[in-house]
Amino acid sequence: MTSPIKAALAAGESVGALWLGLGNPSVAEMAADAGPDCVIFDAQHGLWTRQTLEAGIGHVRGRVPALVRTADNTLNSINQALDAGAVGVIVPLVETAEEAAFAVAAAKYPPDGNRSAGGLRPIMNWKPYVASANSETLVGVMIETKRGLENARAIAATPGLDLVFIGTTDLALSLGVFPDNGPVHEAALMTILAACREAGIACGAFTGYAPLAALRRSHGFQMTVVADDGSLLHAHMKQAVARFRPGKPFSLAGRTALVTGANRGIGVHLVQGLLDHGVVRVYAAARDPASVNASDGRVVPLALDVTSSSQVRAAARQCRDVDLLINNAGVNFNTGLLVEGRDTYARREMEVNYFGTLAMTRAFAPVLKRNRGGILVNMLSILARQNLPAMGSLCASKAAALSLTQATRAELAAQKTHVVAVLPGAVDTDMTRDFQGPKVAPAQVAAEILDGLERGLEEIYPTEMAAGVATGLALDPQGTERMFQGFLPGPAVAARGGQ
Ligand code: 3PY
Ligand code: MG
Image (tube, rainbow, N blue to C red; front, top):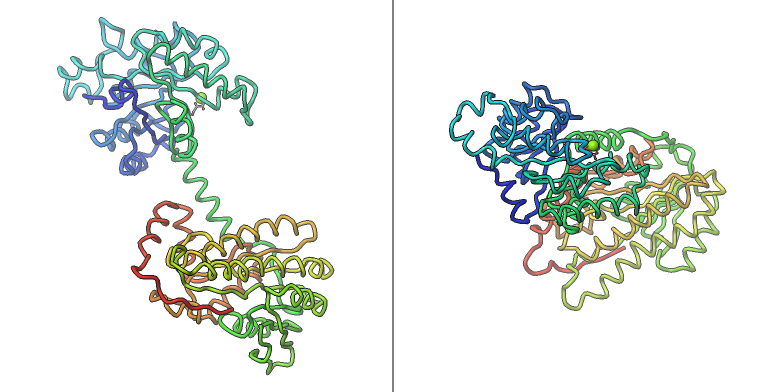
């Protein structure tokens, strides 16, 4: 038995653990497949039985080092974890040097300690196992109480101890600073870290998610937890349910809508869809109102360039009955950010997609307020959430507009305006002429948008592509970014634009 974890910690390296509490051996196998430095089976708060722990460790053994956070500081708990094949134990709630010495002794065979001989896995490889177990088994104790903190130096100096692992949540509870933690908690962590440094042993801290684990690593904590199975599953389940669950349903019938960019692309179909849903009027805005199809008497063509503040103000004065504003006008020059001589394109995209949306929002917020809050819809793109470098500046402008949408939702909540972000994938319009991948007909996208509006969604992801990317971003944001990086063509595609 070798313990690369013990060696790594002794060499001053940092390790990131996956924490397993669900008690499911198959989840342990998935955790090992993810390739962490080690996995920690939580036998204190986790759902492991002796049988499932034995099976779980069997699934990961030989691939990833398995540690067990024991149920408690007893001979039995520590022995059973090691008998199951763990390369080390982390013993909870240790408060004194005597308790730490008890844990060390329980993890070592005589004459060094009082571990009892037995267990299927040790016996399978009996003589070599016993010969190396005492020196290679990692023994860690958890400091996670005020009393443990007070005794940190004595605990860390316990002979045979390899690691102090801080139970950050219990420590916060014990110090009376849960859940905000703050400076008292931070100082306690640093005190324990310093005690471990003085004693020449490793110090770890429970973190629970990767960015915090990386931060703690930078502080010198050598063992952190990058994720735990229960929280991962629960968080993803919750957000999946929330994404699908409708909000307060809205009826489109009887509304007065204003759609910008109404003469082409999705805009044309939004206007038609709204008419089909029974709106009483649609102001169909375009820079050239003659280009708008006004064959239905409810369509009112409106001359509007969203980058012209005077035209935007005039529209808000004229269209005082609007209770559904769809900021659909947009421009895409299909250009990478660093393409020589394309600076004006990036500015133009910001002007239309971001500042145009902002101007319309400002001008129409009072109109919507007068009309019982109404609905404000911003046509963004899934590329607002993930940059596609081939059209890098378009994505930056859409990301800015998404951020604007979030702020708007908060600012207009008091006047009961329902603010919606629409984030479609590739739609078959003039703007995507150069895009070779699968594109969805704008009529279908418009129908998907109107369905989402009626269901009261705050974020609508039309097209299967957008739904897939949104899921990829939730599950694996870095993998999604790398995938999009791969779509960058050699020479920049020809520039095209249009509002
Ligand atoms: C704590 O934070 O208290 C722990 O024991 C980690 O699970
Ligand atoms: Mg704890």
